[in-house]
Length: 227
Ligand code: ADP
Ligand code: AMP
Image (cartoon, rainbow, N blue to C red; front, side, top):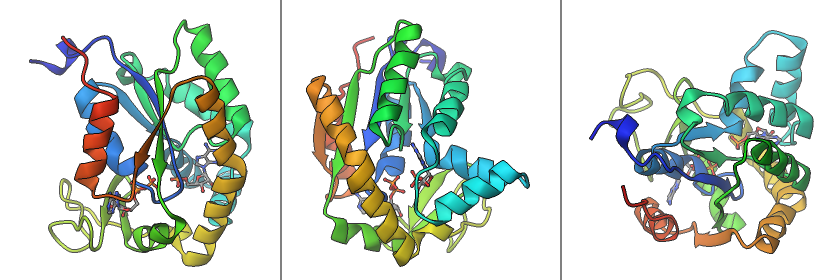
């Protein structure tokens, strides 16, 4: 069946979890299963940070300090990206919202378009595991494809499987920055879990298991809709 005929009912999902919990790893599978778009707020901001403009430099600085960019900036970028044609069927938002204010702004953005969020998936994992995951993370910047030196290595060392282009380490995956990112998750993002729990759309998965087991849990929560 062609992709444009597949599952036109779509779903609207957000992924919540600390840095390194596996949100970006699971997202492409959700895209394939539900024929929706994947918006990673981190990828969008990393791309903005490459611009040699005052805004690009400021974003780059904030990312490397392990802090969050201002709510209004990321909300505006997400709003723009949601207009992409591949998002018409639904989306998986990975790394957004990260504050209660962002969650509220997302709700009003959706209600203006007569849409609503179907589910918030909470990737639950102990902080200890996050350091090993981020220390080995490798990124193909152009596509956002993610590898891990040990857990998910590329076929050829430091090269993307699809394009053969070089993989990079993220500058914010250093241990000292990771500590700050994890702290910001607990302080600023964990209240978002309650926000969605109160609205009865929060599901928690055990993100410490293998990539395959995590995907099995997600499929149980979000089964593919009948065609
Ligand atoms: P996030 O998007 O939540 O920051 P990623 O998806 O980028 O996290 O995953 C962080 C690192 O951990 C990557 O190197 C990825 O390959 C690896 N990883 C992701 N999920 C798992 C898993 N279930 N088990 C082991 N390693 C994983
Ligand atoms: P990520 O790729 O999701 O780990 O995000 C990388 C960095 O981008 C974060 O540490 C923040 O500095 C910034 N960032 C990503 N998403 C958001 C967001 N929703 N709100 C504010 N800052 C964000």
